Amino acid sequence: MKKDQNVIQITDLNAKAKHAEVYIDGDGDLILNKMNVRTERMLLSEDRKKIKEKPNPYEDIITSIHWRDPLNIPNTYEMCTKETLDKLLKENAPCISAFGLKKSFCQAVVRNGIDTYATKFDVSLNIVANMGLIPITFAAYTLEERLMSPQKGAPVNVKLNHFGGWKAHFEIAYFEHVYTLDEMINIINLAGFGLGIGSGRSSGYGRYHVSDIKAL
Image (cartoon, rainbow, N blue to C red; front, side, top):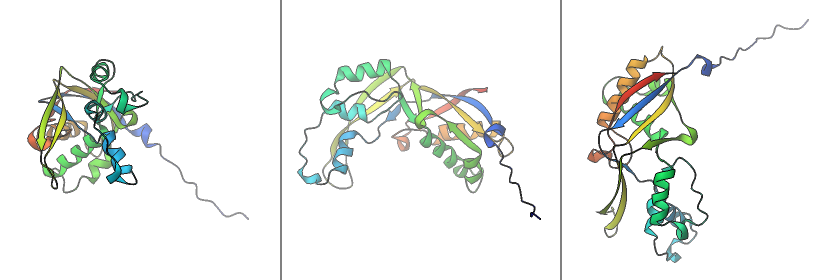
């Protein structure tokens, strides 16, 4: 006689999740400044001290931005120019990180006293984004040169990408029995008001607000 076997039923959570498109408008400049490829080359080199590379400023500028479409530049050192940057700004799209955006939502939950921990919010909302990137649109682009003092060594002159009049939209998948959509949008607004996205957040850059929501 065969013993009864327990049957495990797998719940399709994606089928139960609700979806919405969230639109955000920037309330100030957005600074995008991730690690550029020249710094990556130096960190990955087996002997960093032997590297004597004259920086290409446009390589640093271009590769410090996440782009919607992958950079089709075989040799970024030689081929990154002002013309390359101008073309990318017209034909491609700078992006913010979905990971960084959701992280700020979770921080807003705790910092605003909504919950002691962000665990419930973290597991009840996902940002649906291709390659984890959310493209932005913008009205103005400026390049700021700023002298910064690292913890060790002499001050360095850095170039920062500023985007004014920026906007973005992204899809969220969520479970409404944990937080309602209204509560989630409130948390996103709190994150935009007090935390922002991108670099320079401690100086007030990257702030935003929710301008529209569309159920999917």
